[in-house]
Length: 217
Image (cartoon, rainbow, N blue to C red; front, side, top):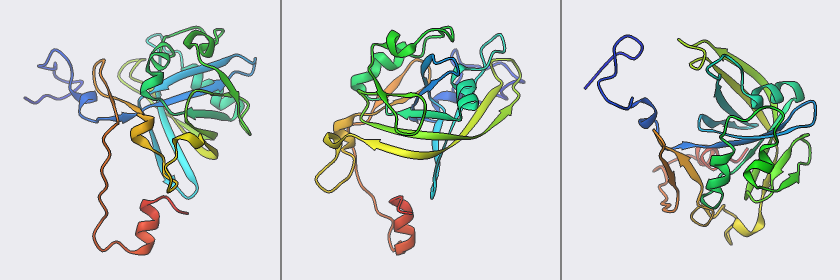
């Protein structure tokens, strides 16, 4: 099976593109508008870029009518966005916060999660989430698509502050991922949960390479 996206009809009932790049980390992002309305929404096109300094990105497709997502607008106008780790225990709240609600509605309240103040960012953190990044907006790169919904805002940020709950750390100071059970996006309507973790170290890696792999600046 092969086809040229945008030029030929997909021969499958469900296009395979989003189901090949998997699993995708979830950027469960909280922002606040200049009017003080709190927003919370998940983005499956989220990734870290580098570690020194720590930088991240997320991509937000437009609505079918061409409107940009509230998260993007808020991040640009306030200069901040906050990443909250999405976990299996919080999966229903994550899914509810994906609803296309109006900019006047508080998604924290609709999703039933608790607001926790940030240290530097003007928005709020999800108190029930075990880890958070307060991110300072760097830039937005707009990429046109073949349709309004295909057009996307790629947003870059620098992590200014990191929060980790003490109870999710192991005795040697690592995040206990199997205990946290982060969720990740698959294709279609599918998600996965991380519970099995294994370690592989690159043979003969230099001290500098090992430091980079561990994220040590």
